[in-house]
Every structure is written in C-alpha cells, then in structure tokens.
Amino acid sequence: MTATLETEEHKQLRAAVAALGNRYGRDYMTKVVRAEAHPDELWADAAKLGYLGVSLPEEYGGGGGGIAELSIVLEELGAAGCPLLMMVVSPAICGTVIARFGTEEQKQAWLPGLADGSRTMAFGITEPDAGSNSHRITTTARRDAASGDWLLTGRKVFVSGVDIADATLIVGRTEDARTGSLKPCLFIVDRDAPGFQRHQIDMELQAPEKQFELVLDDVRLPADALVGDEDAGLLQLFAGLNPERVMTAAFAIGMGRYAISRAVAYAKERTVWKAPIGAHQAIAHPLAKAHIDLELARLMMQKAAHLYDTGDDMGAGEAANMAKFAAADACVQAVDQAVHTLGGNGLTREYGLASLITAARVARIAPVSRDMILNFVSHQSLGLPKSY
Image (cartoon, rainbow, N blue to C red; front, side, top):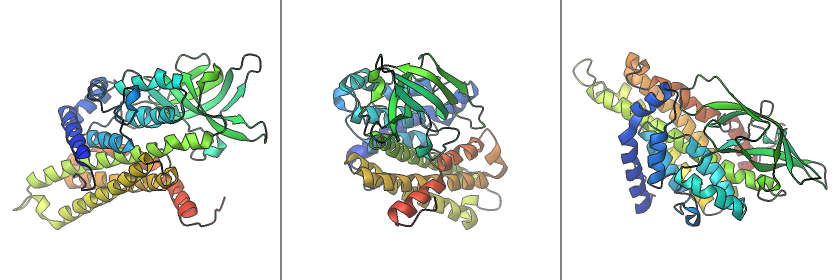
C-alpha cells in the first residue's frame, strides 16, 4: 500500500516501522489495555530506533525530518494494530511548537527528551464550554506584577495522557494591554505544579491512553513557562494544530488499513458455499471501495504534510483539515465493512475488530468535528458567508 509519491527514504522508513509494529501487533495492545497499563515497551523501542523524534531537529537529538516522516511512523504502527496516540500529542504538537517557537532553554530542556522518549508532554486546549470554538477559551493567564510570574486559571477536558506526561502544554489567553481583548498563549505546566489537578474521565473507548479533566486554580508559573511570543498566539497555536490534524489522519488511515487487512484475510479463507466469501462481489466490492477511500485520504494527508514541512502554513491548514475529514470517514467505513465481513466473528474479542467501532469514531470527533471542518472549507476555501 505504499504510495508512488513517496521517496525511497520514505519507503524504507515505512517498511522498517511496519516490521516493528508487526513484532508487537494488536494482541500486545489489547493486553496493555486490559491490564490498564501503557505501551511502554513499544514506546521505548520506537524511541530507540529514532521513530519518535524523526520530525524533531537534529541539533536536539531528532531525526531532522518533518511531519511527513512522523505520519508514516504512526500510520504503519496503526496498520499493525498498535498505534501510539501519544505520538500525536508529544512529538507532533508539543515538539513542533517548542521547536518552532520555544526559547533556546525550552528547546534544550524538552526536545532531546521528546525525541528519545524519556519525556512526554500532553496538550490541553478543549474546554467544557468551548468545544471546537477556540475563541471561547476561558482559561486565562495574568501577570503577577510583583514577581513577573504567570497565574493560570481554568479548566480543560479530554486531555490525553496527563498521567504519564511530565508536563502539559496548556492553551490559555492573556489580555492585550492595548485593546483589552484576550489572545491565545501557550504555557508549559509541570505535572506537579501546585494548583494543577487532574481527574480521569470514564470513557467507553478502549485505549491505553487515558482521558482527563484538568483544573487549574491560580497555578503559578515562572515567566519562562510562556512558549514563544505573547503577541503571536494564533500563529503558534496553529503550528501545533495543523500537525495534529495530519497525525489524526495517519492514526485513522492506519486503523482502517488494519481493519481491512483482517477482513481480507478472513474473506479469503471463510467458505460458506463453494468458494471463499471474498469471491462474491457483495463482499469484495465494499472492501475494495474502503481500500480506495483510504488511499485517497492518504494522498491528501501527504499533501498536507508536504505543505506544512515546506513552510506553507495557510495551505497546510486547508489540506490538513481535508485530510483529517477524509481519513476519518474512510476509517469508519473500513471498520464497519470489516466487522460486517466477519459477521458475528466481527464482534468477538478473538478477532479484535469490535473495539475499533468506538475508536474509529474518535477521528470524526477529535481534535475537531467533521462539521467544523465543513465550516472551515465552506468559509475559507469557498468564500461562503458565515451563519455565526
């Protein structure tokens, strides 16, 4: 399933990551989830082989590649049945933001650890009352005039991996001294910071990465906890959100590929009448269409990654949203068709597809809903007026 647009280095990376993923596979991830543990062994091996830091700068221990390379890693792990969701958060969002906008001290403190897997960082943007509307974020940061420290107050929900992360990159808002309006800013909040509380959200989703609600009650942060320029918040924010959308697409495409591969293997062997069920067009054609849709979504994902890696933030924003939209839909359809192909077996633990029914829908919902992507495309790409 390797796209012809990829370089030889990309093909080699894809093959190498696939080999790692196949050594672990879906059974490993299932055992981790049932033990309420984390995929530490896979994370460590991916780090040792340089896959976690492939997109981070070489001078800080990374591979010097981009989101194109990192998306290949996540897609292939997903296709093997063992995706690492924290790759979306730690190296892709947080690592990218710090690499592009962090101070030299922040880069030295975080990037080597994010690259070698010894440190992880969560990302908090969603709020109970804001949802997909980042302009309604109410988590605010104000300066302590006496000390120069920041005081951060607010709530966040659906923050992945806070229990294992060394810190969380929090999206807050500060007041513009000239206009009085609030503008987004990014802060590194240490996991043990006083006033920083977390509460696990009970989810039906079966995944090793837990979801949390965060409460920030006048969390005192040093002046250097601010990432980047206080006046360039939106630029810095979308520097992380565009890679997040690309990586979500990779996550979905990998999951869809895994589901289709299981269905195809079953359809080749399962015989009801005279021939395997895969010989019947009622089974074969929907699987073929699911494969086509996944391949088309990958092309848009590759376009988005290329635009981002070459510095076209505006173009990448449009393509990343489209890639995420297409990949999420393709994933849901692939999982649904795979389960349908297996019939009752598709709902058993033995075949490992039933848990994907819920997981596949995550890509349609997070990190931004498909409806908000349609809003973005209708307004930004087509120039249609807003209703809000």
